[in-house]
Length: 594
View 1 (cartoon, helix red, strand yellow):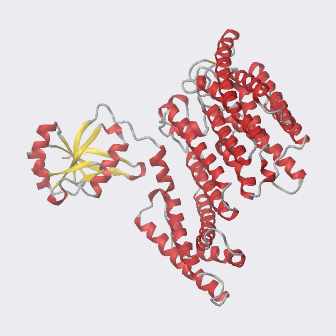
View 2 (spheres, one colour; view 1 turned 120 degrees about the vertical axis):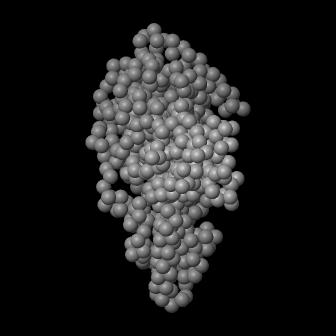
View 3 (cartoon, one colour; view 1 turned 90 degrees about the vertical axis):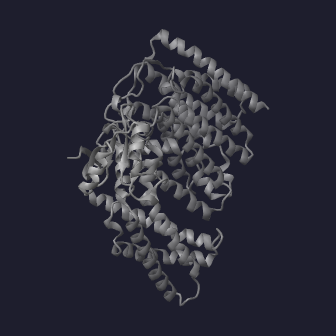
């Protein structure tokens, strides 16, 4: 009950302090004005971090457990709060802030608080310093859109608190709950449209405290190695992911990492057509998914976790690659979702090298996953030895057959059924060859035959999923084109592949000012069926459709239609237009038939 009441009162204190600080910031002129490297469009008061800091400190004094380590972490975080406050007022150099962050992290490590990821304390010290500074800057970078940094911090605190409760650590769980409450009180005023920003004082304090509180978990006492390695990184996966995207894309484009910009994950989602609110909520969801995975990993053995977590990381890498291909050219276009241009270098050989490396990783996952499935998630010692010994051989054979089979001749963007057949054929051939070689090495004793069948099934699934990933992400993330309000209803003649292509191009290019009403076709067997949700009518119904629904235009999906058929359609009163496609731009020219 103490945790609940403490959290409620801390959240109320956070909201109250935020309300007061907002008015004070207005009077003091502490207002963030719109700039080219900022996302917001109107002057907004800052210093919201003061409310976060004050509410947490009060909550800690009244309800927090007096943990010696927490006093150290809070003291170091307070140093960063005041450094951030100074930066909000007079602006200090990026390298000065970095030195202060390193000093704060060194204070924590000096008192023996560290991540126990290796057997060597010196190595753990460096890892811990890198962790604290990295998470501090990750939250600072994440503070780029209304409600994003505060919301992600809130979700991360919730999962940290659950982790502490699983460990039986009520003290750290209380601290995580108090920090979550402070973030929640501020978030009430910071969610879109935000009426106050937290500033560097709030972002650096939140980030350092999040990283510091994660050090208090009983990882060192945990018997689950997966929990030791993966839990803190998974809980804070979204700040880490955003930092990686920004760092890599800025390096590739030759810009300083410390320079501000509208090239974060949230900005790229908006550039792909999402609203600001929806982009933030999607990142909330991804943060919750990674936090849930962190809890699940604690209940799994290390063999399964070593497959599940890298698999999740690979999915995140695909998302990063997809978002890394877009940037925002200017504020006006970005907010309307019209500025999607390539940022990463488009060199053919680099793409091919990436494909090969990716397929090697997928082949490893497939072979490892096949062993786990065959042995119900716990490989016997002799099977593990066989896996380690034969893995290089299996990967080499599979990659050779993928190359010979023509898998690397296609483009992911245009993958079709023929490419899927090439993948399946190459994997089966490579799987059969590698199975034969391994069986000959062991003289049919030791390796399980079922492993190689499972390996082929998994590898086909992984390869096909990787090739379809960008298309799937485009479907999930990118918003459909907004229909043109001046669009005229049209019928598409030809319920076939050409008609389907024409319908798709009209839907993705609203500038044509056409809105599909349905399809017409001479084949009576197609009448009443649907293509892309649009009904197919018999061509004889054209006069009735034109009369009842005001449809005047008919788009002909084939340029080889006989003149007699064109004349028949014209005699019914239709205004005909034929289609020609410019493949290089994926757009259509719709021209009146002569």
